[in-house]
Length: 194
Image 1 (spheres, helix red, strand yellow):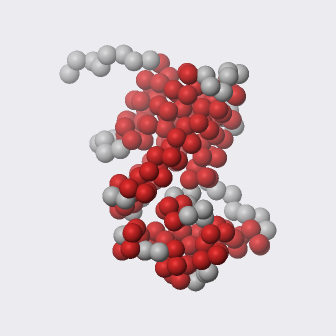
Image 2 (tube, helix red, strand yellow):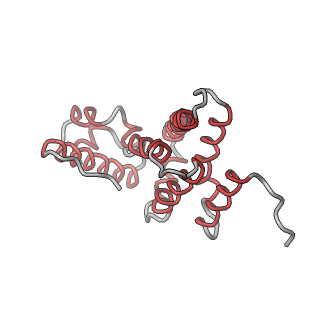
C-alpha cells in the first residue's frame, strides 16, 4: 500500500504525476505508442511539456510510471521482512500481494499488448528488469552478509523476478506462484506421476 505524501505540495506533485501517467496510458492504448507525442500527453493532462519532463525521464517512462516505487517495495520486502521470515518467503509474500492484483487488472492484457508490440517499450522493460534484478540481488546479499556480486544472491533475485512470467496464464496463478517459490525454497523434486 502506498502512503500518501504528507504535505500539500507533495500531494499536488503526486496528483500531477498521476494525471500525466493516466493521460499517457489512455492515449497510448487508444492511438498506439508511436502515434502519441509528449506534447499530446501534456495537452491531455493540461500541463506543459516541461512539467511532463519534470516528472518523467522520457516517453517510455510514462508507460512504466510506477516502476521506481515497485523496485523500492521489492527491496523493502527483503530488508523489512519480519524476524524469522526467510528471504524467499518474503519475496513470495511480496509477489502474491503485488503481482496478483496487477494480473487481474482489467487493462492488463491491453497494457501487455502495448508493451509487447512496441520495440522501445519492450527494450525499456528489459532494462528495468535488469535494474530490478541488480537492486534485489544487492539487498539479498546485504541481508545475508554476502558480497554484492554473490552468484547465489543474484540467482535468487532473477528467479524471483521470473515468477510472474512463469505464473501468467496459468489456471490458478496463486498456486503457480506458490509452486515456484516452493521450488526456490526447498529445491527441485520430480513431479508426481499423473
